Image 1 (cartoon, rainbow, N blue to C red):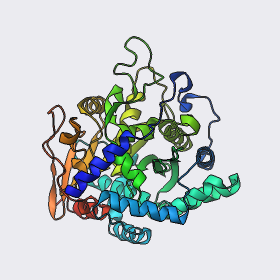
Image 2: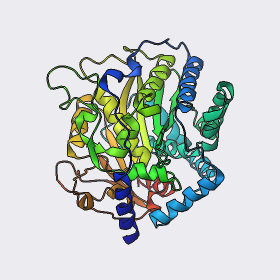
Image 3: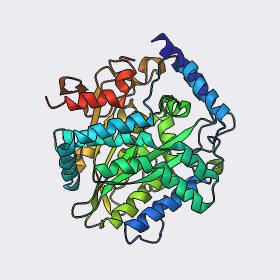
Length: 452
């Protein structure tokens, strides 16, 4: 634990020196998903539109993550030396093999989960079929081929589009074994200051299923242990008010009406999701890019303001943090009285191994809105996982609290509900558990036991 404490001190000092992404000025920040654009007519058009935006965004910044082999070696070594603890990760081949095994033993559960998705199901009790498939979807996101993504940065448009398609080929192939289609909706790397080349943006994709009962599942990629940039986003946890919502208007603007209700949230995750990417902070906001992808996909699946396509959100580790903040603000924005009706509807959130992402007011606001909308937030925690006890509240002197509702899973034991942290002040636990229990393989063994 001493190694981890030293790591946190190192991160705290490093974060103090970071040039934080500057929020876009309100006058330049009207969400692009509210602007007129050509409506897609079918799934092929939707995929092309998403791909074109994706390539355009990848080619905007000066992506310093396009590293030489030598730089990559230094980056990996620095991670090990900085963290000071064992960070093991399965190879892509191992992960793909495990997913194949999980798929083979879960055919009935996958079919049941797809029926629940299409029925806009949001039960008051955990649907373990949906949890099982959600964990598999969160896991397969680790199979993105980042080398192909880097190739797309410098390639001409036709070659860039092929490189982007290649980057998601492994994910698409496994999704097909579940009877689902897949497309990336956001994959951004920041225009880093030269001395801070390691700051990575969110990567998420959409698993979707056509008629007669269409649905979309948005899955966010979690932390790659060898990627220092993602660890820094995970650990940049100093609370800060989220960027103001340019759509908020009227009395009290900026008070409870900003992004994420103006709550204090994880600076790294909120900045990566709601900050502008591109030269000098100007460019598409990842949140907006994801919404545009959902609009296109839902419309192509037959969705409309009157017949909305259900959308579920999931993620593991850092992906759980992104998933939580994206889900919360999408639910907030699209339930406002003045908001434009969308062709999709947010249903439930399922996260795995999420760190704490915000102070109390965020979780209380999300709990209240979820109850009003009759949807549910499920936070799955593996017994012994260290990450859900982060951030270390007594080191930061800030009372980060988990969102409801926590469900504890453990290999060989039935799942149990967890006591709410919201509104109770400082959480009881601090840096409890280990890293091994944070792995998706360990989560899989625990989830399999959940219904004993």
